[in-house]
Structures are given as structure tokens and as C-alpha cells.
Image 1 (cartoon, rainbow over the protein chains, first blue to last red):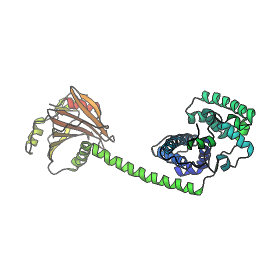
Image 2 (tube, chains in turn yellow, orange):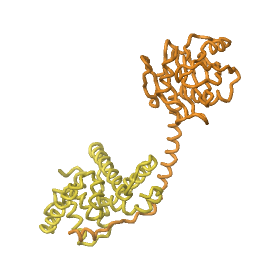
Image 3 (cartoon, rainbow over the protein chains, first blue to last red):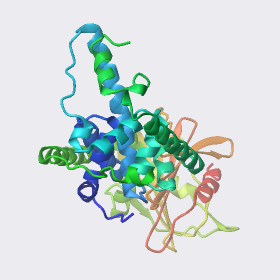
Image 4 (cartoon, each protein chain N blue to C red):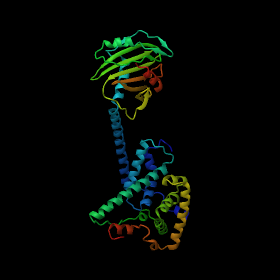
Length: 191
Length: 214
């Protein structure tokens, strides 16, 4: 990496990339907190003299960790909310697909991805959508390169299968966590 | 399938509001980071008061404190590569100072002494300072502290053995190396100081000198 890159330069260069990753990864349009957290963590790491060879995959790796922490916090918060206030959570108004202005074909593709298990989703997101190579993906996911190759191969087969079998999105409903199911769960009516 | 995946957007615009929010938070982190570094420095100095004392002495003594007197007489007796230290003269010099207590001195040093400076600090504890100046620019500083407060070291010190005695070694920015040990309730801080003409002594050399104390 060009070690002279400041956090502001990193931010300007990769802000849209990181935001895009978080939208896919968290499947919500409300990614402001993990987005901000990503650059704060990156800045702290830079201040502590972290050695960075590939700033893009480095930032995405930080974003993934920030997103996972965000998911954990949200789960804990929602559990408390369900237990103590019974407050109704309003369904999300705008979906990731809306925000990205996806056409019908891409919506089907993205929903097919979300119907797969998490490891498949992650490797498809990084290798397939975000165009990271095997080495970069392995570094981000903390996997071996071989695992990346094998999992990606299986994920693509699975995705093909999901899309061909179906096209019928409802066929797989219940296996994957859809926004509708999430909202039912939050309202305390889902199982 | 790979081609289809590539059609999905790879970047998404962020709002100006979010951009400003993140940039502002980065500035806050910057300020907090500076404060944290500052606090860390303050904390560090609190942890190692003895090291600060040594550093002060190392700086002040060469400038010449009032109560120091010179022994200009050479003590050139050779003992192998070491030179005999004229302990009697040093002790005689120190007797003129108040608060004498039984302490040990090096029997020999690895250089020929040009002069020896002695002095005593006006503190609650009795502290004797002796500086051994060599004719080749060598400089050793010895602080002898009559204190019952045991110094257990910090994360900056390394445990060493001086014969049967356990001691501590610390290096201050490569310019001052200090060996600390205690014997019979008296602390000894022996420091090697880098001068313009001498690169100072190593840890092992300081241990060798410490072993000659009697």
C-alpha cells in the first residue's frame, strides 16, 4: 500500500465500495453505524502503525467485523425489546434492492443469494459481486485459499440450483431469513 | 452465473449527511487519540519515578551541582584490564558530607579514571552520587540510596543476576543503561552514560563492575 494514504484519502477512495458491501452483507439500508465504525477502526489501526498491503480488502475486512458486531448488538437489543416492551417494530420501508435500484432479474439473483447459507453468501458476495481474488477473499474471511475455491464453486452450483429450481422464491421461504420473517420474529408472532 | 453476479452494483453512493458525520467522528478520534497518548506518557512517568530520578541525575551532574567536589588525583593502579578504584579517597571525600551510612564501592573499573566527583542530594532519603570520569570519555554514574523502599521494577526493566544477587537492568533511549540492585538495605543504581567520545558500557560489563563492589 501507499503508506502515505491518510484516512481521509482512504475514505474518499473506498466509501462507496464499503457502503455497498455493508448493504449486501447486512441486507438493510440502515448501515450508517457500521459504516462509520469501519472508518473509525481503520483510523485507529493506522494510528497504531498497522501494516497494510491491500487497503481495499483491508477495509472490507474491517467492515465485515464491524457488521458482525453490529448484528450481535442488534440481536441483543431486539431480544430485550421483545421481552420488556413488546414494542412493535415497523417493517423496513426501503429494501436494499430498492436502494440499489435493481431490475427484476438482479432482484431474483440477489434473493437467490440470500437463500443460501451464510458462508456461501459471503464468498459469493466477495468473489462474485465485489470481484476480490482468491487470496484477498481468503484474507478477508480468514479462510485458506483452497476453502475459498471449493466453497465458491459449491456456492455457485447451489445458486444455479436455487434459481433454476425455482424461480419460485416462495419455495425456499422458511429456510432463509427474509425481511418478512425477521419482522414477524421481532413482533413476537413468528417461530 | 459469474457474469450475472458481475452485473450487480459494486458501489453505492452515500449521503452527504453521512459523509460529514463520519469525517467529523474521525476528527474526534484524532483528538481523543492525542489525549490518550498524552495521558499514557503521564502515566508512564508516574510508574517509573526511579528512572526519572536517574535521568535527572544523569543530566544535572555533568552540569555541576554545588555540593559536588572534585577528586582530581588519578588512581592509575592497573589490575588486568581494570583499574583499581581508590575507595579510601572517595570515602574520605564523602565523610565531609552529612548523613554517612555504610555502603560499598567498586573495587575496580574498566577504565583509567581522570577524576571522581562525589555529592549528596538533599532529599528525605540519603542519596550519595558518585561519578567516575575516564580519560577516554568514559562516564559511570553511581547512586547509592539508603532506603528501605524496595524497587520491584516495571515493564521497562529486565531481571538480571549479579552473582547471588538479583538485580534489574533498564535502558533509557540507548543513552543511559542502568543496573539496579540492593544489598544490606542499600540500593545501588549504576549507570553507564554515552558521551561524545565513549559509547558506554553493555549490560554484561555493568554486571561485571557490580560484582567488584565491596
